[in-house]
Image (cartoon, rainbow, N blue to C red; front, side):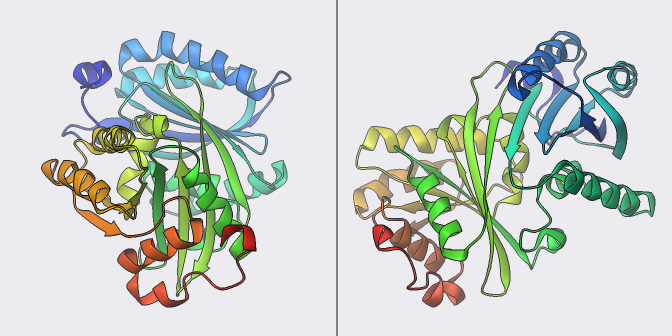
Length: 338
């Protein structure tokens, strides 16, 4: 167990903490990542010792910050945050008490998309009006609504469980998960959003995603670097994913390493995603399935070359959404992907 969880409790454990999410306009002149590293250092110095966890997002000239911990400490920290000159126009969009959702003291994300600062402001104001009118959202739902560009398909339907399906993909080696997301973006003519995540002391890792409409539902397919699976922000959103796709390699050791990372990330979750292994080799599936089932996670088999984006997604759809599998990948894929 992570030292943070030993001292302050695991994510999802019994016992409520105070939770707050706010959005503010960034007022920084240096590089975004350098400023966020400075914020991280300050947060770990002041917040970690008192049990306050933080997730920080920078997108389109705005910060979104999600904090949770003991109520009295959170109030003191928010008083200090309000005076920080690196942001302005702070708007609180969520307050609640509930279980810990962040399984560590710090996560941060930088999102690159085509939206402008004004686009982001409009989304913040729209959400603030909804919250002020009495609509209730969880902290992860608030985060999604503020970070999803409004021109993306299904952006306003995220709370409908029957409309939106989220799938996370990780590769045992190489960049097959990112190739898959970029191929889907090209196929459906949708923007691929680039993100960088980092934890309390880790170097940043890549994660891209694409939203597209298909078969009567909105799909979000996310590519995550293997070493990003343990980050508190990643773990907080794992219950949102219906399936976690494992693009397996020919190297058995790499596959074992990936499955072990996945099992560690899913440990303690009440609703972990189902695992979908992608490989042609039955032996690769046997090993991955054994490890998953020993940990109590379901394992589904998708038979395809994990390095072939088109074949991989078609095979995944056959087990994830059989009703959409026949036309899941239309024949307009560029020849380079065939």
